[in-house]
Image (cartoon, rainbow, N blue to C red):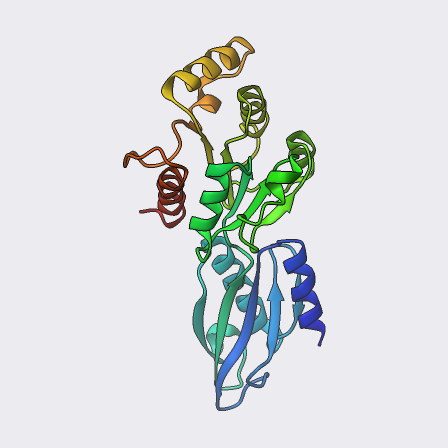
Length: 252
């Protein structure tokens, strides 16, 4: 089926979309139960009956995508939708591929623990670490997308979104941490967290300010990363970071 191949392609590209499916029909209507349409911000495939009904469905699909919430809507096919079939069509708009995505720079002890804590949550996790023994470690859960490459190469190729992209920086070197922050802070992201102490961030901030970076950008960084719940063991830090990520995602 065409829509299946389209969905596979969108999933591969991590492109958010809406699958609109006719779930109920009563009376006369231009479409059968099961009719489908796939909608992205700029394109659509398939049909749910054409005409003004379909135009409304496209608008409602894109509104659901923007809101990030699936919804079911009933359409009486009368004058309000510019059609005179006289029936009623119900369409379910299912938002797909809009999960939050964490770019985790550093697959060390805390990074591995964070991946384990986030397993089974809404987050898709991509770990970036050029050290083969760490990025290839069995402690990283299978759901983690692994990038055994330098961080700067990844940043150049990655997709960035002000709504869905989260960043956690916890590499094995402070100079790498600072360089990563300096690059990702200019990208569209929803969250940027840096592991370390208040002192570490003060030094980073002073250096970045001296390079001309303004306060509005620097204020985007959360350091120390995570909720202030205590504990310094990798698993304890991971729990505090995961809690902060989930709170940000769900708006708690």
